[in-house]
Image 1 (cartoon, rainbow, N blue to C red):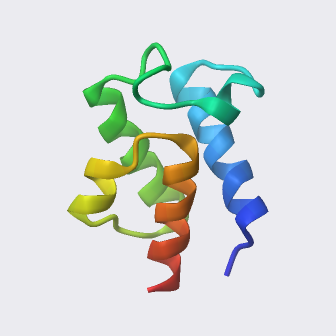
Image 2: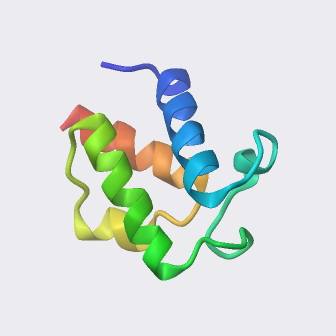
Image 3: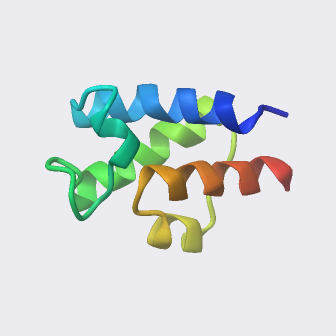
Length: 81
């Protein structure tokens, strides 16, 4: 199982690539405050994370994970199942 730090690094790299933010902006990235994090991009982010981690998110995780930290929590929960 990956550590939280490892998960954060991978999530950061995916968000940096998809949202075109820098390494500081990614730390506070969120759907409400990050330009480019549209509903379509939200789905793309989840597909990229599922592929990277070999997991499947449930509908609640997709609906309510609207920030970097919430994504990390959702991944850790999905890995633990």
